[in-house]
Amino acid sequence: MNRRQFLKASLASSLLGLNACANWQIRSQQKAHVVIIGGGFGGATAARYLRLYCPEIRISLIEPKTVYTACPGSNRVITGLAELASLSFGYQGLNQAYDIDILPTRVTAIDAVSKRLQLQTGDHLRYDHLILAPGIHLRWDTIEGYSEILSQQFPHAWQAGPQTLLLRDQITALPDNGTVLICPPADPYRCPPGPYERASLIAHWLKRHKPRAKILILDPKRSFSKQALFEQAWRQHYAYGSENALIEWHSLADNPIQAIDPKSHTVMTEFGDKFQGDVINLIPPQTAGQIAIETGLTDQSGWCPINPLTSQSLLIPGVHVIGDAGHYAPIPKSAFAANSEAKHCALSISLMLQDQDPTDPVWFNTCYSAITDDQAISVSHVYRLDSEHRLSQASIMGGVSSRTDADSLKQEAVFGQAAYRHLLDDCFALNI
Image (cartoon, rainbow, N blue to C red; front, side, top):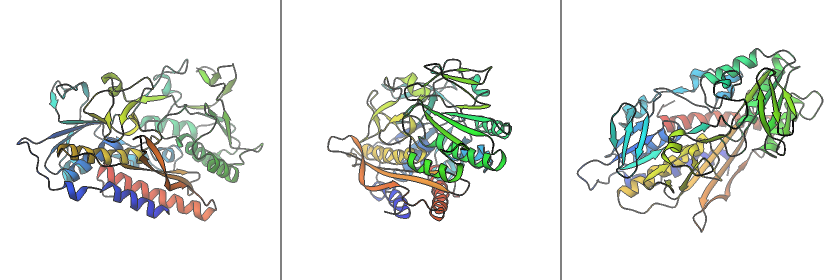
């Protein structure tokens, strides 16, 4: 199945059941109310598709930020290939074209028994179904010496905005023979190939502006997403594996980073190895967003266990969780996956409101990673439930980039930009 067919199939699946649900009448005289907490890729998609499936219900999206800044694409901002404004979107399309109530506030408490939310404004909001899409929470307690305050000196840039610009400015000011340390977290975390795309694009910038500098990736894993494709591209473009390599990858699986010394710009491993960097991009481990933790939706892993058939929490009945916060393994935590999870969640809720059983779900994920300014690699997979209702990767479709000649990789980059534009419009109703 080629890339165009895959994206077409994913769009078709997102519309599954639309005609069957579009004209149903709610049995209750009062409109059902679905509330969504979190306005990222998952939450925005859920709002939009709920309206497509259920024209008669009331839908509220609670998001304190009036402008959402997307993390996908931020590596291009860090390396001067795009502006941060290109990643920032409002919710006017959802409000005006889809009649979604946008509430710019925070939820301070969830009463799942009475189905009532307490808002930061002091108001209370009742719901019939609740969807949580709270994204991630960065764990500041895992690296000795690191903190949220210190991230202003050693940026993670894993939540787009000021951190993105801070890392961009530090890369620009790097000494001619300077060293950049990129320190990814252990699995699972948001966007598994993100640190390696970041290394690729920073190396692309260094090759043009500071060819004597280098990047060290200090990885707590023994392998990483699309490793063979990344390493092949690094050998081709960035002298990977040679004395003049712009990128070095070090697996620290048996000797992970445990501390950082801000004064000497040094990170230290469990067995005392030290790495000094002029720029240190330290990406801390992650859990589900804070509201999920405070509500008791997370287990010992820090993520929200769910029933994939309906996206409902296994810990608190009647609450659905989608996006990065949910434990949908083996589906990775990506924007495209959040979009796919949200569509199925919206369809499941529309069927529940009609007292119908949920459909057998299919999820899609595709991920394009830039390796230069105009070349990219990709991975695409389909996921279904097995005979025991466990999530598994289907073998019938998907895969990684199969051709790695320059023309094919440039075509991948074009496909990637087109897929991202479609994803943004599908989530936020941007019509771009």
